[in-house]
Image 1 (tube, rainbow, N blue to C red):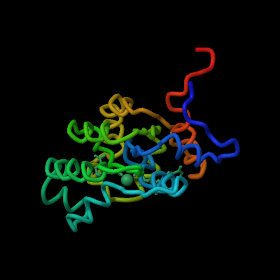
Image 2 (image 1 turned 30 degrees about the vertical axis):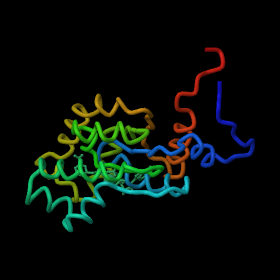
Image 3 (image 1 turned 90 degrees about the horizontal axis):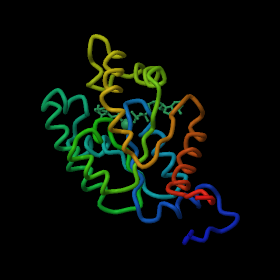
Length: 196
Ligand SMILES: Nc1ncnc2c1ncn2[C@@H]1O[C@H](COP(=O)(O)OP(=O)(O)O)[C@@H](O)[C@H]1O
Ligand SMILES: O=C(O)C1=C[C@@H](OP(=O)(O)O)[C@@H](O)[C@H](O)C1
Ligand SMILES: [Mg+2]
């Protein structure tokens, strides 16, 4: 039984907005997957507010993510990330893009699961690498072999990201196509085929 009656001519974005209701849509996934970029465009399409947890962390701390890691270390960064996420997820609907490690941290993961519908932007190593190697803003990749580091993070993190409610493959298509895939995934969430 479908208890939401959709207008026949509703656009993809309107239908996704209806399906989302008051929930937040939370982007998770590895560095370079497009959480920040696609999250922002998805919020625009849905006509709801967008927040990026890294951006919010930088705003409240008045420091860059790199400086936070360098001065206080990853553990302090994670503690701040948990606090910021808790606040950002309090009201909905919003699109919330998280940093790649947020969902891996147990306390933040609990907040995120409680705080909305989760969407994992899954991606292959080469796609991520092409995107992240252009910038040096990611402290975890300041290693001797950053591509290997990224691969190690994939191995460790993908089984955890896979707990997300929705998964969309991030690939080299234009960003509008990515947004369409995201909106379709939201609409299709828990849709039961007619013959089941
Ligand atoms: N589908 C896409 N096609 C091409 N470039 C993309 C795509 N998605 C994201 N990007 C680019 O890849 C880079 C990393 O994306 P970003 O949103 O910062 O990822 P994340 O927040 O997951 O680390 C940005 O320069 C962004 O514009
Ligand atoms: O994967 C991670 O642990 C991190 C990802 C970054 O965010 P993006 O995934 O948006 O790059 C940022 O939060 C920080 O550098 C740590
Ligand atoms: Mg980001």
